[in-house]
Image (cartoon, rainbow, N blue to C red; front, side):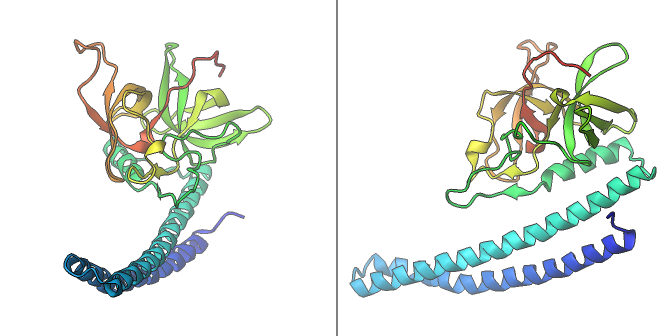
Length: 288
């Protein structure tokens, strides 16, 4: 059953309270862990001069305590991130309800570009645990073949203009009609205000999570890979080559867009967030 505005507000407030509590617990845990870390550093300096078994045993004990402390802090951080994602989901659900009720908010282009940037920067970050498999739609990992994008999800959509030209645009899923195996999507560009009915092969779901380069580099496109990327300050995808990979969770890909106006056929390096870099769709015969 759809949430009312009051129910959504109460759920958000509940999660914000839980998030505040978790943040306080994380800070308390961090301060507590600092004492053990400082002791490890101090004993490591002493170990350079003192090779006694007693000192080594004490160091091993401190390392074990430090590992347990780090795991506890990680658990709290993951719980906090879960609350943040809950809030995002609730707000997105309310936005979709408003749109379906005919109350779609008009967003100016400058605000839209800023919103897309923030959306990419705050996309949930996946940090795998030892031995954990990277899920679909994390970084460069494509969706499963049976995956159906949900209402409100962002996708790349291959649409045909009135002139007959086909372009990949950034769009939002309105619904998937199982009886026809087709999506209804809205052009994210408010100036277009177009709704398209497209087959699944004309849709590429965007990542739902960012990959952490420091732990899950295999979920990033290798340097030199040809991809589709959202050209900065536009809502269209174009072919590009990965020039540099992000090195930290907050960095973006550096890409070279195909551009015949430049002597070598490529644009100067431009930066595009993980969320807006996807695999090239195979050139198969498409239908609308």
